[in-house]
Image (cartoon, rainbow, N blue to C red; front, side, top):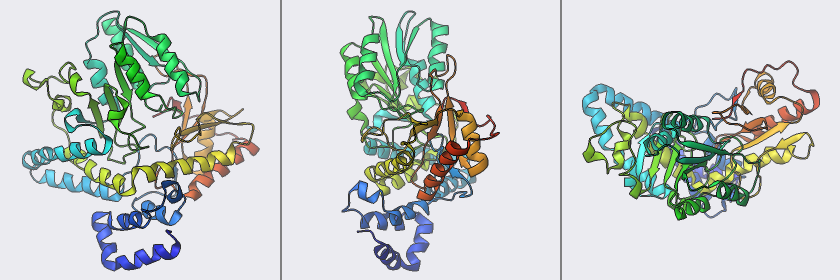
Length: 447
């Protein structure tokens, strides 16, 4: 049992030298804490504040603000941030030498990501974000006039805009499915199945949406598509390193990710998975010689870029592994249920995410009937210094939906006090309204 006494015992055993080591490598205390809870269930550890205090102390944060918009980008742990600076300092000494040297070591990063997330390293390309990953696929597929892409009204705006551009440029057909939130896996599957026509060439959908965290039946849809000769493009920006799964088990053709979200890597990191047999027939975003057309590396051809940002993904992955994917997911779910359970009994509170086990972890949406989400977001900032995203629908090619709310996304460094402050703020708004809170902090859609 990871008790206060056990916590202090581990801290005492580490001693001053270990605390110095933690400052140097960032993992000593975290690994000791994780070892001490190794025989306990993730759900049990999720409620152990002594354990999570070690995680919280691994970050350098501004605790005068409460960040519940981790769905946009997440702060990196100190060990990751320091690694990034270290690699930048190294490259700056003699860029043409050290930058090339760092680039040659990136295969270690690819190999680590592939092993952790379940695919082959020669199916993984390092990119700058999920948008770039997915646009490589969207712009690189051979589609002719009349070919149909089926996606949803609630996919990410940048991806919808990309398909809209191909519609305008190449005269393809784009069909956008609407669905209620929350809904079921069967409902989503049936909506896609009904929409498929003889002209359908691509199904494009989220693993979980960036709005409400709606989970899609990726494997079932991938199998449906493959049985009809249709390609599957999956937006995994909010899934990878958020909850446990293996990419190969999804059976999709393409999968795009932002690593600066739930993996806690430095801003400007992404991953693209391309199923091996699709690599030769997918055009890269930027031109490469014909001899490279069979290599996954062609999707990394973007010219000169800061290798330090990609090199430090190795530290972010190590930090993720030190916590453990199951423990991390259980903690995120525990934090979400803490605020949701405290608010859901109020009839004016509308929770737009499925809180059942295996459906929601660290991303959920909530609104208050009669209060504009943008005004509520501004109230959170003005009164309680809570940074949170207001979600409202837009017009095509942006996302289109008829609900509004706050997207609540804590992370592993979030404290119970911060979650409880959000509950207090919501209860204040329910009781007293939001006054003259402005409407300037919200944005159409989410991140």
